[in-house]
Amino acid sequence: MDNRLAQAQFAAWVGIVGNILLAGAKLVIGLIGRSQALIADAVHSASDVIGSVAVLIGLRAADRPPDEDHPYGHGKAESVAAIIVAVLLGVVGFEIGMSSVDSLFAPLHAPEMIAIWAAVGSMGLKEWMFRYKYNLGKKLNSQSLIANAWEHRSDVFSSFAALIGIGGAIVGGRFGIPWLLYLDPVAGIFVSLLVFKMAYNILIESIHTTLDHVLHEEETTDLRQAVEAVPGVLRIDTLHAREYGHYLIVDVKVSVEPSITVEEGHRIGKQVKQALLANFSKVRGVFVHINPYDETNTHFMPPETYDSPEREYLH
Image (tube, rainbow, N blue to C red; front, side):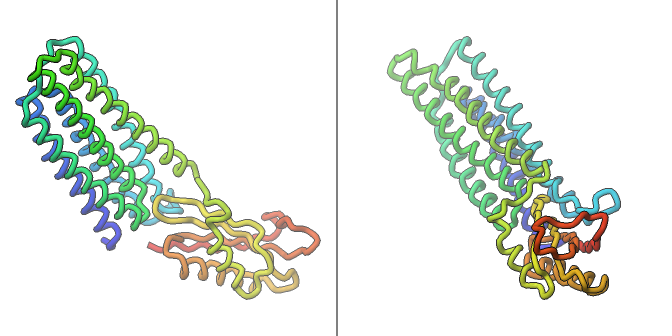
């Protein structure tokens, strides 16, 4: 198990254990303290457990080496895990919203003070979990970890909304202001809207990556410079760097002197591949296509005429 996978899996387990304990505590306190907002917040934390499990499975799948059916590796498993997290968040958001709406039409009671302390404690713990997973996800370039981190941040917002609702309802109960009692279930509805928004953002980003997203030209400047520095490369015709989870697959077509031998062209292609793999840790696979240079034509020659592929995958 490499260091990247070990760190990512540890972070996923932190989320699983932490959310189980937090969801259980908030549910019990929510029932004892008669707070619909805190119960809704507990359901949200429970959904994070499923999300962290999906992330854990996705991380293990993404680390598997290429095989016959998946020659580019399994890196997109992380994007699939992030999509699962987004869908789960959407379902939970719907359930929280429906439960809170139902509470508006039921007899309302002011929550107990213990619910306040539970919401404050939840905010502190979930903010720590967000920062820990977000920073690690950025460091490891893990989309699923970052998505899971945003789950924790949404829980911070939901706990804050619950705190406002609980506090308002308690004030309403103590000072005889009936309409303030509605703040508790209204806070639950607000939590559901926050969860929906977070789910939508994660889903859109994950689908974008899954559909063979390539880096924009300005993001491939370093890759292009490395290729252009290879002796014998006269021009880069095309360069596409596709995101496969935490790594990149690069397809590059370069023009070389037309009069050189096939062996010399093959050597140049090999050097291009090695330059990319050796200098960029995110590059996991390279496909090099050799074209004969034509200064009167800026377009590459048909691949069926001049084709010299080079592939290599590092695990």
